[in-house]
Structures are given as structure tokens and as C-alpha cells.
Image (tube, rainbow, N blue to C red; front, side):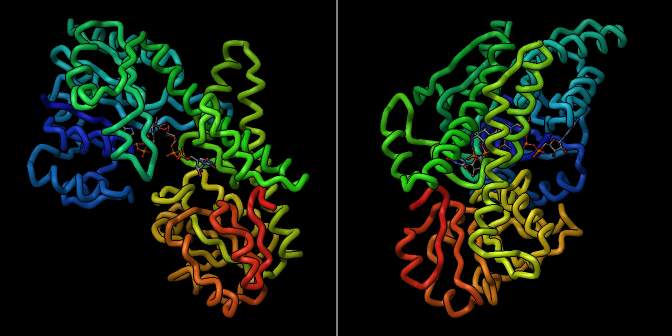
Length: 438
Ligand code: NAD
Ligand code: UGA
């Protein structure tokens, strides 16, 4: 079967490469011509573990191709996946211009039956709306062509995207047509044969499942961050509290790690969009809004902790280890680390940073940011008066504290990812603080 993908970012490229690795013929399209030219030569613009190898294997097998031509992409296959970006606007509504443009482009090109599968995260009602948009364009063209719309939300995480795509906890297919559902079952036969559950629903339900999932996960993080803040005030250890709580199967152990607040390209935007959707439906989403508010305060709390440990920040050299919003990705979108750096710069601190993968992306996206990029963690810690561990990269899990103690000007270690045993770090003469730790 041939499959087309429109939008070759994290989700589009992972979807395309994984489907090609399962034997489908896949064509990926993007309007970013630089990205496509690089991909044709096997070069990726993003870091995702294992993805470069997978893309290059499929290029060699000749069943994965790249193009900037929407006409070529639409003609290539009867199944078109939309995986474009869906940012949130200031007023908490979704900026639908990319998905609308993709639908419009499809509508102006199709000449036979197509299944249009939306994988982007979109407000409930979008599938129906783009269906109407496509019908309108077809009517303007004066052609009678049938098509089906499917909502097939994606649940992969950056850093473990390939495994998450190939082995998801569930597959969600929202469609109103039996033939479209059958085609989706064929596409996901590899996963379904392994016993991965499939939920079929109407389009609106599938769209809502995505928002409900991301909001619940983000709520768990805001919950444990709030608990950890209370722990700090009453000598309780948040990590043990999280473990003792998460072992209850009804609660579950995952997503209970306290830290600097959730970031990334999705949780912050999706939760705001769901809040905006509820407001547009005249519903006041107080729980969802408090998830956002706790997260906003968590970043401020990190600054307060840093200030109380390091003293006034004016002209102080501060090290930030980690720029990406989490380990194993070079994505810095809504990174807590970046938010903290900006606040420290406001307070006139001198910032030295190191990240194993995200420094180039950070430089490109923030050309004016006055920070010193260093070659490794130890260079970044030279003459430091406070080390902030902001991202949990493996490389930061085995720091040589004996060496660090000799390099720094003042031994202060702020472990915002709770990687280290406080007693170990303190044994090297450091002042240590984690998040919610005793
Ligand atoms: P991204 O920004 O990495 O990639 C989107 C790509 O779409 C870009 O390369 C852009 O140039 C391209 N594009 C936009 N409009 C286009 C058009 N009309 N024609 C061709 N190309 C077009 O975004 P992403 O992180 O892959 O996210 C895509 C969607 O998937 C979003 O809705 C997001 O919420 C959702 N999602 C993302 C993740 C994730 O981990 N990143 C996981 C699950 C779901
Ligand atoms: C998240 C979801 O986990 C995916 O299921 C979803 O598909 C994706 O969003 C999306 O819709 O884009 P992702 O943003 O890649 O994936 O990363 P996560 O691992 O969920 O982490 C998000 C943020 O929460 C990071 O800043 C991370 O450090 C933070 N986090 C996570 C915590 O602070 N504590 C935790 O216990 C877990």
C-alpha cells in the first residue's frame, strides 16, 4: 500500500519512517524545502534516537521518499496522513492555518477517492470542519469526488518516538465510514497483531481522547509538583511520597517525577487549547486552568530556590546543564531550562550552558540570547557560583563531583531533576537542593 504524509516534522517523519520500515511505500511532503532537500540525502533536521538510521535504511530500500510537491504527494496514494503543526494562539485558540492549508491543498489536487487521516492534535470539531472545507473546494472545482476523514491521534513522546509509534498503549481511530476504518486496521495490522488495543469511535471522540490524555498526564505532573512544594515545607521526601503513592495501581507510578514544570511543544499548548475550547463552549474549566497555573508557578519557584541558595544573582556566574525540555531530544520548545535562563538573565546573572544535543537549535532559535555555550559540562562549571541541572540527560547522571568541587567558585548544586542522592553530593562539600527532597 502507498501512504502519503503531509508535514514532515517529529510526528510526520517518525510516522513515515516507521510505516516504511513495516513495508509500506511512503512519500513524505513538507513545505520547508530545505528540510526536504536534506532528507533526500538522508540528513535530518531533528535529533531523535534511532531515527536517522531508520530513515536511511528505508531510503536504501527505496520505499521512503521526500518531496515538497503537494500535487505529487496527493497523487501518490489513496491514504493521506496530515501531521502538520497546530500551535496555540494568545487567546488559547488553536492556530488552524497549517491544517486548513493542508486540507485546502488536498482538496484542490484530489481526483479520486481518498482517506484523509488527521494525526495532528486539533480541537474537537476540526475533522468535521476540514471535511466541510474540502467539500466546498470540490464543489467550487465542479468535481464529484468522495473522501473520508479520519481522526487518528498520535501519542508518541520525543526521545522514545520510534518505540512509542511501533508499540503504543492503544490505537485510536475516529471515523464515520466502515471502509476508512478497514483501511486503518490494515495500516496498523503490525500493532494490532501484537494485541495492542484499538478503539474505534466517531471523529469528535477520537479528537477529545488526545486532549484528555495529554491533560491528564500534565495534571499528574502539576499534582506531584504541588505535593513536592508542600513536602519541602514539612520535611517530607517527595520522591518517596511519589513512590508510595504511585504503587497504588489506581494511581500508577509514571509521570510522578517532580521537577521544574512540564515543557515541550505539546503539553503547554494542548492544555491551553482545551481550556480555550471549553471556554468557547461556555464552560469554566477550573481544574484544567489550575494545571496550567501550577506549572507557571513551578518555574518561578525554581528561580526563588536558586536565589535563596546562591544569593543575589547580579553578576554571578551560573551554570545551566541541559537546554532541551527533556532528555534525549534537541527540542527546546517551551523548555523549562530556557524559561529559567531568561529569568536569570533578567536578574543580571552571567550564564554558562552545556547540552549534549540542543545547543545548535538553541543558538538558531534564540540568536540574541547572551549566554556562553561550552564544550562540555566541566567547562560550563568553571568558576561557577551555582550549578543548575535542568535536563536529565544520561551524561549528567555520572558527574565527577571531586573534579567539579575544584572547578567551581562556590559549591552550590541545584538538582532540578532529582538525579542525585543529596547525601552523596553534600559529601563533596556542595550545598545541594533537589525538588521536594529533604
Ligand atoms: P513540527 O513542527 O515538528 O512539524 C510540522 C511540519 O509540518 C513542519 O515541518 C512544517 O513545515 C510542516 N507543514 C506545515 N504546514 C504544511 C503544509 N500545509 N504542507 C506541508 N507541510 C506543512 O510538529 P510536530 O511536533 O511533528 O507536531 C505535529 C502535530 O502532531 C501537532 O499537532 C502536535 O501537537 C502533534 N503531536 C506532536 C507530538 C510530538 O512529540 N512532537 C506527539 C504527538 C502529537
Ligand atoms: C507528551 C506525551 O507524553 C505524549 O504521549 C504525547 O504524544 C506528546 O506529549 C504530544 O502530544 O506531543 P513529550 O512532550 O514528548 O510527550 O514528552 P513527555 O515525556 O511527556 O514530557 C513532557 C514534559 O513533562 C517534559 O518537560 C518532562 O520533563 C516533564 N515531565 C514528565 C515531568 O516533569 N515529570 C514527569 O514525571 C514526566
